[in-house]
Amino acid sequence: MHLLEAWTTLGPFHLARLLALPSAILVATLLPGRVLARGTAMVCALAVGLLDELAVPWWARGAWVALWLLIAWQAGRPERPDLLPRPPRRRGFEAGAVALPLGIALLALMLAAVWRQSFEPDDARRASLGAMLLGLGLLHLMMRRHVRRASLAIGGLGVGLELLTASGRAADVAHEGAPAGAALLATALAFLIVTRIAEGRERYAGSAFVSDAHELQD
Image (cartoon, rainbow, N blue to C red):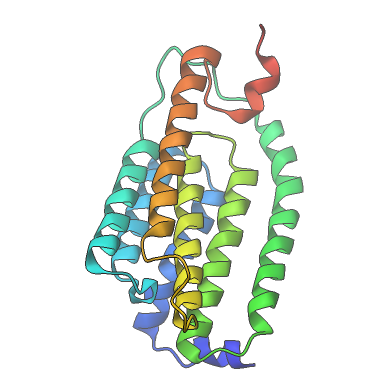
């Protein structure tokens, strides 16, 4: 009950400020399109800039905003005209039919783990928001099949890890945990790797869709 009270006692502005990031990622998970993906990343950049719960220095939060702007640029890049046509919608339906219930189950498990803990209201919101972003990031990776737009999921996972790290740091009296910005560095490296993989798939496979992998020939 403490977790529900931590959220229901918030005013409309703070509730919108906290839920803007997971809501944007959820929309990009359920709906396709590069324009929508770029708009989602822009909303995430604004939301991260207002996310005091990250509990990181000003330079780290500014770096998070810059990273999300890079994600917006990357996710919204137009398709090259020489790439393979978009795969049939049937494959996307089959992937979503499996991924959606699995992702919801993983999200419910992570939120249940937070529910069982005894947190102060601020820490409860921070930990539950981090778990929510981790679950939505995994759901995005399972449902969306475009490698370049997977950077949205990487960004969501990174912010979720940063929030959970901040919760752990608040309870770490020995100060032996990960420093502020560690999740940012890992997310930036993962973003670079995903970008490189997307460029390689487009150059050598002719498609950035993961579902086209079985059509490749040696």
